[in-house]
Image 1: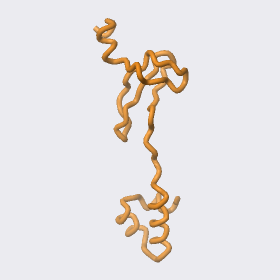
Image 2 (image 1 turned 120 degrees about the vertical axis):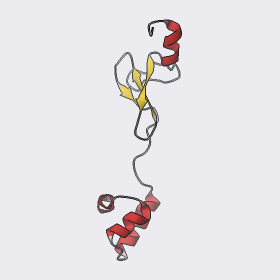
Image 3 (image 1 turned 30 degrees about the vertical axis):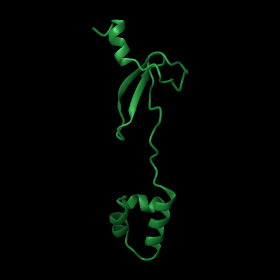
Length: 93
């Protein structure tokens, strides 16, 4: 039964602090992100958050190299293969 305090200690993480209310109590695990980072849910606010989200951008060095190759005459597909990024990303860099 999840209501007992012994079993609740398994699900609660007392080290995490809610970004909304700042409380450390009542933080429970709530799955993982696509980047395999742990998500938590605040029992007080009901909000789900990731304490240290992974940056979703490419490094400045990769961006510069991709632009350089594209400007030198390489087609989008070759830049896409070299860096493993989508050609749509190349247009937005």
